[in-house]
Each structure stands twice: as structure tokens, then as C-alpha cells.
Length: 73
Image (cartoon, rainbow, N blue to C red; front, side, top):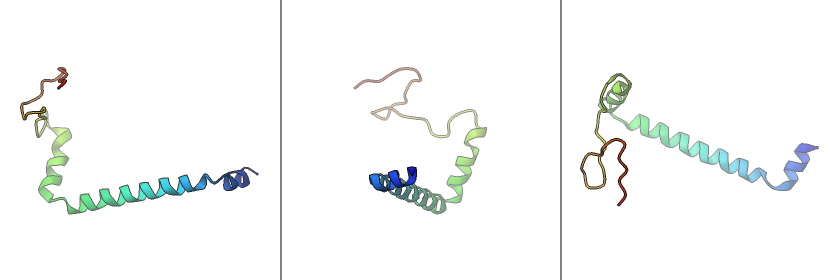
């Protein structure tokens, strides 16, 4: 009875749409991983083991951001 109610309500299109979004995102991630160079993958693999970030974060003008300080433009 519940299946009939859901089928007749027309909400199954949202489930199909969500599945499509998931599939597209999954394929995009796989393509990005396969196209990455070995050097990039090695650098990403070492991130959890390093004490300092590999690439420092920068603020809106290229200057390094200070941790804990909010920048409002």
C-alpha cells in the first residue's frame, strides 16, 4: 500500500534526480583522480603525515591569512 501511494504521488522523479546527481559527481571525481599526476597524488598522500600545510592559505589580496582573525571586506 505504501509503495502504491509513493508511486502515485509523483515523487519518484526526485529519487531518480538524486541518483543522477550522485552518478555525475562520482564520475567527475573518478575522472579527476585518474587525470591527476603521480606527483600530485604523492603530495596529497603525504598531507596527513606533515606537521605544516603543504600550501599556505592566502587571503583576499594574496597576503597570508592569520588564523583566528576574521577578514571582512
